Length: 485
Image (cartoon, rainbow, N blue to C red; front, top):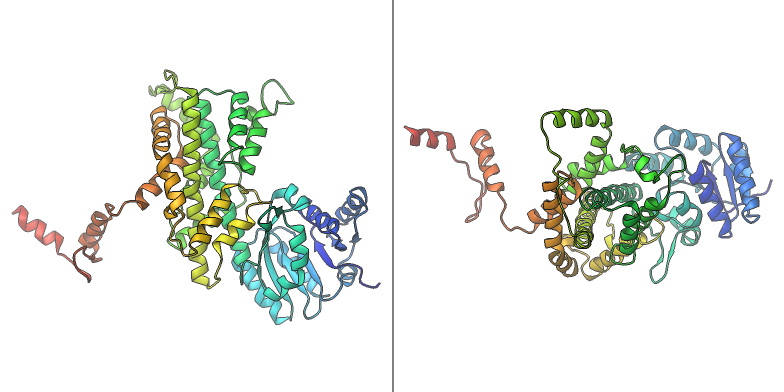
């Protein structure tokens, strides 16, 4: 048959289906394929129901590939790892020189770089494209982070500009990220920042609920209010929604029946591993990952609670009276200040990788495409974009004059919340580590001199001096022994 479609999509789990319908709805005829053919029929049926959209289903890879106009562009949305290699193998047998494959999954960036090289040897183009926004975003406008072949990006730029989330005043939430696996890397760090955001929100909830004794109705009102100001964001909005949902299987609210055990797919872990590899401090993101690990030890925590209770551990919460209104305001400020630190860490990680790989990533442009469609979308990203517009070489978001001023204005509230939490026996690892990050970064002198002296003492690692240049070694042990005689 003659080619009918402008683009193809392989992999029809919900994200794949939704993205295909989004593309079709924007006026681009699309062919779809899935190994399990029932998913193909399901997608075709949805396209009919959702407005007779120009979507064509195929049950075999050959007719699927041949239905797409040349140069062919195919998006894959399958599980990362081996399934991607399998899909490439299936499709590339029917592709011709100049055709292009785009991986839209959460893939490890080096896998994308390996595949891009292998594809180039066959004369094929390759893109690794981060897609954020969940199922809703995929259907109505995600944030898209394509990296790899610029030529391939140019093939489909017109489609991506229409399919991506549209933000008034700043345009479609897509940009060519850069070479190699940069698109996947940026999406990975986006997910790491998302881990941090979610943990900080959970800590705000814990302090308000456990110390402030706020009910779910009050929490819903607080988060709804916060969502009208500087914290306006998708995650704050959905948090307010969660507090309003009643349990359909019993009394009370559903949130109180959800098991306190957080799952994870791995992008947060990758982010922390990359931060360590690049020697970039990312304590807020790391503490959110640790919090997920600890949440997984539910059975151990239940036992530990019994052990400490029988060992005489007093619950320090019961006897406190707090001014609710003041607490709510303090927690809002602590959440905002902590969030600035978390984003600063994420941006620094992206920049360090960009320098290592020669990607020349534009941090302000990343903040712009995260303003809509994606899970971390927030009004606050506009401030980040403007900070990098003011100074593209900004060493750290914390030292942008606007953000510095905001942190200074909020630091008293931030410290009050962290102290209150500590004295109440409530863990706030995200807020505490953000505060420690700020307090370390803003000090011109840290106790690292002692650590370096210790290293020189036991390992002759040498040290530098504050009053002259060069490396020095001191026989600390000998001098100490002599002085003891």
